[in-house]
Picture 1 (cartoon, rainbow, N blue to C red):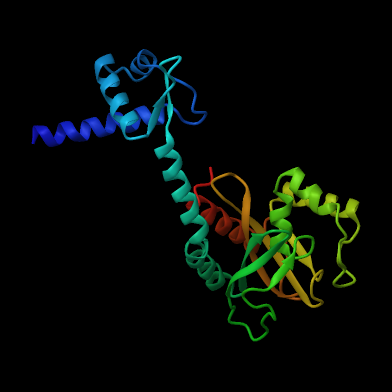
Picture 2: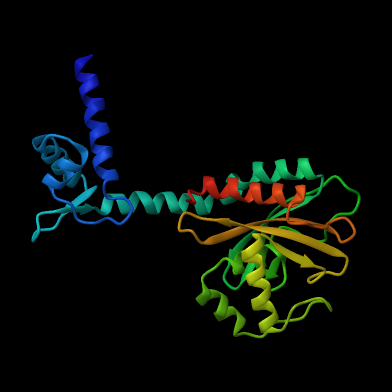
Length: 256
């Protein structure tokens, strides 16, 4: 029993030492870590050597201090890849739940280059349904989910897209660059986007961004349906539930 307890204690200490390097991975020495964690210097030194041997830390040969090592990078890359691969699997139960609560069609749009792709659709129970299908490509300046993603993306990405020609799909499509910039600013302020018959006449949509672990928007949840039925107010139940769903999915993608 003592040996098992000791092993657990050593693992706890090792994980605590690794957490010292979050969030900026600044170099730290044995004495510094020992004082910060109130651990014996000999204990810290032993754990640091073990972590370095397994690649979780690396030692600067000049300063003799430690940094996170390549094993951490490989673990992070594996996690990031799994999140990308499993995005639909992660989002699906939340989207299905939102569909059941709102009784409307819910769409997952995923960023892909200069467009978004419909990755999943939870069909609503109402008689009138959307014409869109999984795999459809949507332009970033028109669809609600696409606009939510672009609005919260980096200024460089947003401006790069705005430098191009904006195609018109309906009489309501925003094709003026200044007007679209103002629209993106409004989306960031209120936290959700709108498609007011901008892609298809007769269809309205409301979108909220999903953020990944790198704090960038990677997808969006959208409520879509006939324009007479899909309306919005900032404090409406529809908008509140939509934003809550997007936040829950973001949490599972390790967005902080």
